[in-house]
Image (cartoon, rainbow, N blue to C red):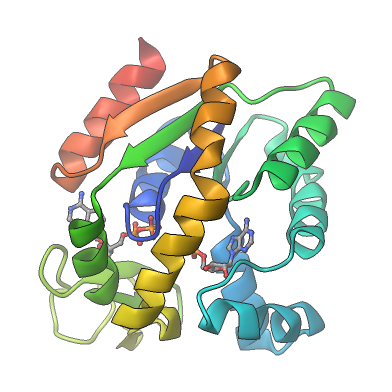
Length: 214
Ligand code: ADP
Ligand code: ADP
Ligand code: ZN
């Protein structure tokens, strides 16, 4: 199954991606995670991406597209994949389409997680991520067992630099301007699936699975 997750910042893409990739045994490809890993390692790509990310802006298309193309060529993508946070612009979506066509493949579904603005802000601002493994928690909706400590690896939890309220508001604006048009794009291709993302984590997951199996 070749899937992509669409939705504004804080909608729950990363949270759902973990469960979906486990359910179908396909790799979870998050461009945001890849950039954060590059920043942590101090690579050239990380240096280029960092200033855009901290301002809540999108990283330029060419940087993202090349990275995803390379990733899709890896052996583990033969059985399918789950893209999380890519594509985020129409040019990225066209580039993905072209690349998949070359491989004689196509996207099966675009899963659009819908959540209203006030809820997004509360989710993103309360998000805490593990410094070591990147797992995401929420101070209110998905608290770790021990405050500030990752349940998965014992690492230290921190707030993402771009999860400060003003930056989240900026990211939502950027989403509305550059990413939301993809809803119509995938709807026209007949592969869009809308999901109510304002329900509990487990209910959202069940709706996604039902939608994909149905
Ligand atoms: P995204 O990848 O779309 O930015 P995340 O999956 O990281 O979103 O979720 C954002 C924050 O909201 C995280 O702290 C996560 O624990 C929390 N969260 C995710 N889904 C839900 C949900 N259905 N209800 C409440 N909180 C959620
Ligand atoms: P969220 O899950 O909250 O939407 P992500 O982790 O997906 O956030 O992305 C964090 C940041 O990484 C984005 O604000 C943007 O700067 C950069 N980024 C991630 N994916 C892309 C992409 N496909 N195109 C451009 N920038 C991206
Ligand atoms: Zn961890």
